[in-house]
Length: 354
Image (cartoon, rainbow, N blue to C red; front, side, top):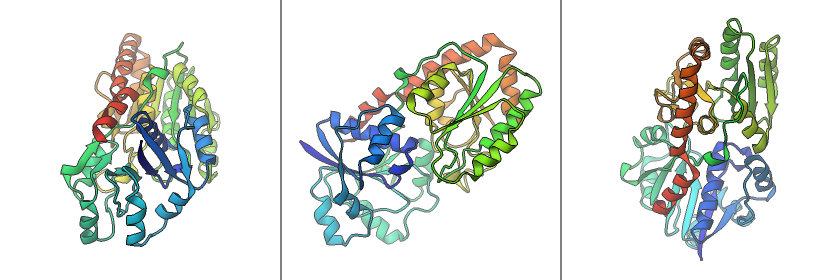
């Protein structure tokens, strides 16, 4: 059996990127790899199983590997350690490591404007990299200005679209995104502004803001103050079953990450892909999202609406509410479009990657 090592320095955030990495680990297991996860404890894996509704019992947690991956190891030490593996999948934090396995894969979830600290050393390290794996064309296009395009590989995040179902729809507008995102704000405040506008036109809709919150509570306090008097509900740290139920009942999906950001100057601050957008589409919820980053790769004219402001989000939502036949057709098209980003397609691309 071949040996694989996975290192993700952000594993404890348990966001969409971590679901991506752990799904890849499961894909490697299916392809006859043993998988070591460089991490100090199994606690986060157990929490990930609950949050994502997945079984990670086949993954081995390797504390020693974590110590070697998370510190600046000497060249000879890194050479000896990484040569033991047939494949290494390494999530970059904006730096590039020396890796010496048979198949070194550097995964880039963030479109870093500046990658690495030294161009000459980066070029040497790149020699040992087999593929730079990007989560979207958007991320790839930003980083190819610094890294060789010949080693680029786009692997869209895996969405288990078959586990989502369009249920009996209610007058719910849903947004799913971390409240304490460490890299870029999900801008729930913009969605509250949009809902204030919409609530002046229709009275029977509710906005549900769902997402993870592990640290700073200050943003949440500000959001709750801003939404006083509105039909806004907060669902904190929902498990996967709760999310599926919310998606199933929601008629619309809103997302505002990247609002007021120049994606050319600060590409890391917009949505790099948009996993929750695809989950919503698979559930028959029509997405209305800010026209930035990877969202533009997901949504087509007949499957959702790309918007530039809270006023447009509210206005386009109202237009769909007033045209139920268009709303129904768009919801059906969104479900079909979501299949492109299926777990099955993800696993098939893993085969070509390895």
